[in-house]
Length: 463
Image 1 (cartoon, rainbow, N blue to C red):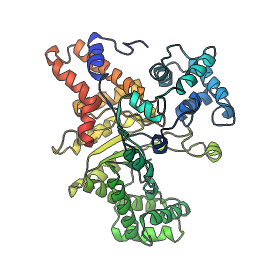
Image 2 (cartoon, helix red, strand yellow; image 1 turned 45 degrees about the horizontal axis):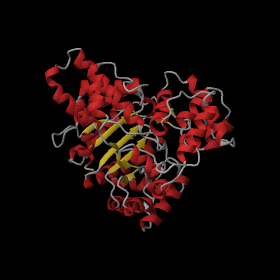
Image 3 (cartoon, rainbow, N blue to C red; image 1 turned 180 degrees about the vertical axis):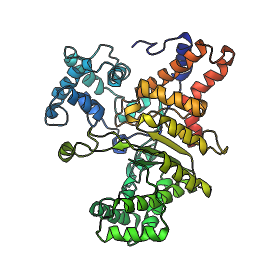
Image 4 (cartoon, helix red, strand yellow; image 1 turned 60 degrees about the vertical axis):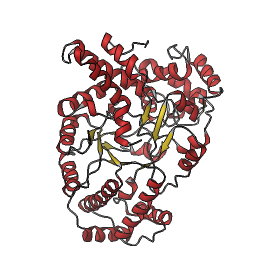
């Protein structure tokens, strides 16, 4: 993992070192804590920074036979780190092996491989480094050359921490992202009613009807915009689609609020109606909307009851999203209310379907209006990134791709951008070496690399 890690040709090395590496980072989708950024949080140990909330590492440790007490349980920080160190040598060919050592090298200057023998030395060295000036939440963002971060926020969030960050004069833009998934979660009547009540309190709207629900969501949408939000994000398992009039949506909403449970068909209808209205709000403000779709969540019910969501028990869903997605995009496009949209599929089997779908709704208004998003979650590794970029290249324009994001809760996950950039440069470099792209086009190739790493996102999101 030296300077030319993953760069197998001279052209790739030139593209990375002279073009990709120098570009700032725009992390337009992540799960960092705005409160930690506002407080410029100092991490007590490398375990807190590295293993807290990282369900990628948790899954690997479980697969390696590590007991849960050393993962999410009561074991000490040193014991948890030690168990991770013992696991690392078993992660060959898993992206965690590369990410681990890239993070150790870039954040801590450690080039020694992590294993059971080196664990104590590395643990102590990392903790000593964390005690230094500049190793806080904000310091790490500065160190990695981050320019913009978009967090993930529920409509009921106050955004007080974003406001505090902005007013503090912190030079990195930290913007909220509108993530209204709970406003669509109508399949559980009791949970949904509680959420709607909270939404009404925050919005200052007594929500007794479907139209009042939309009014409350619009008010919060406006509030997010006032706090600098430019991006929406919608997470779904399978895209909902069923024709549903406003009158029928109102009837179904009343049914949920009265305590009745909707049947599966009714759930899809009401979700469709709400999602369409949310997408229209996004268009009215010129926001970019993202769709993350396809996961099956919390499939291990015993562990879900024990630990809750986002603890490493989600998986790739076997859904068919093409038809519903086509209907949704078309319904928005018919009356010209389809905003800039990024599509992230978790199932790589859908790559060609999604890339081809994006091409159907390009309208010439801006380059790459509908984006086939970067390899997401289970696909943000070498094979997944290459498959995504190859499919995009065949069905659309790689040159207009808005590039990588971290999708992470960690302040040392920015080497994922480096990882992506190296893979991108190697992919394109091989094309030049093989004569698929003529050498006389090198100025255009160099500009394309810089665009994908930074410029395209800067223009697309209007940051």
